[in-house]
Every structure is written in C-alpha cells, then in structure tokens.
Image (cartoon, rainbow, N blue to C red; front, side):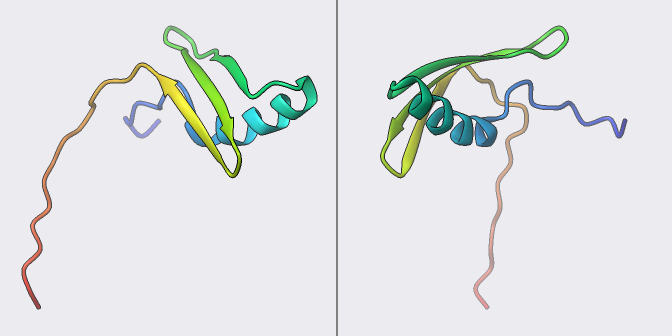
Length: 71
C-alpha cells in the first residue's frame, strides 16, 4: 500500500445503505457494523428525509490549519 491507513468505516456508503435497507425493512433507524480486519466500526444511521444522520465513535488522525492571504 501507500502507507495511508484506511478508514475502518465508510460514512458515505452508509448514507446510501440506510435509506435502501430502511425502506425495505420499514424502519427509519438502523445499526450497522462494518467489518474490517482488527478494527471495524459501528454506526447508528437515521433517515431524515433527504438526509441521513450518522452516529459513531471516532478519533482525530490529523489536525492542521489553513491560512489564506487576501488576494
């Protein structure tokens, strides 16, 4: 690999999966587990019309600041 640690859960994918499975199961809120060797992750997803609310645990991997000078 390129040395970049992959995110053990994919929020963007669950924003698609939550409405899909929620509609099929007749539920607005679903819990997902994304398996990933040694890490994995759990997400609570709630369908809110055109939006999906995601909840889960996370931690900061990188933090930085960006300063823009006026043009």
